[in-house]
Amino acid sequence: MPEIEVTIEIYCARCEKGICNNAEATRGRQRNEPQFRIEPCADCLAKESKEGYEDGYDAGINDGKKEGYDEGYEAARKEFEKAEEMKP
Image 1: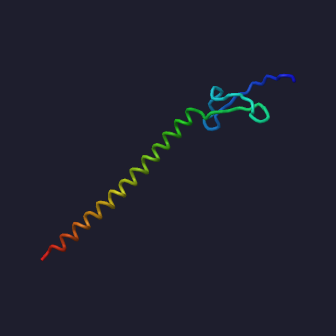
Image 2: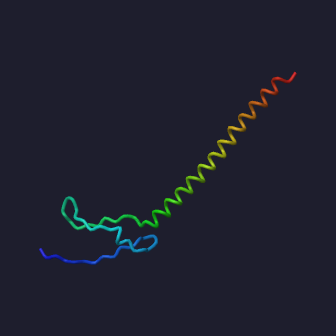
Image 3: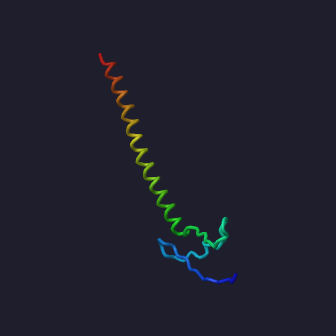
C-alpha cells in the first residue's frame, strides 16, 4: 500500500493559537485507522481553571456569609428569648 505524507496544522478553537505540540498521530485500536489525539490548549485550560476557582471562591464566600448570618441570627434569638424568660 502506498504511503502518503500529510502536513496538518492544528489550532485551538477558542484562542486560535497553534497547538501542534499538543497533538499526536496514532493508529486506531480496532481497525488500525489513522487518528489524532489532541490535548486542550494550555492557555485556555489555565484560563478555565482560574475562572472555575474564582466562581467556586465567590460561591463559597456567599454561602459562608449566609450561613454565618443564619447562625448568628439564631444564636441572638435564643439569647433574647432566654433574657425575656428571666424578666420578672
